[in-house]
Image 1 (tube, helix red, strand yellow):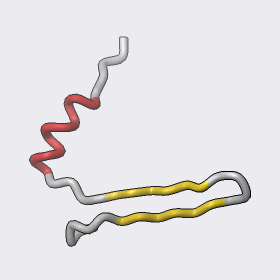
Image 2 (cartoon, helix red, strand yellow):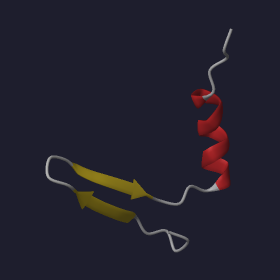
Image 3 (tube, helix red, strand yellow):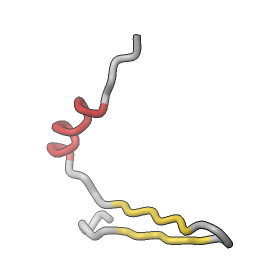
Image 4 (tube, rainbow, N blue to C red):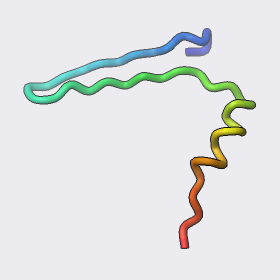
Length: 42
């Protein structure tokens, strides 16, 4: 991931397949994204 490559992990059981995809996110892009993901709780 540190080299900028996508990491994919897949595993399955008898009924379901699970897949995790991860990639590095630079700090500037993270600053633009995080406020949109934060929702105030009343």
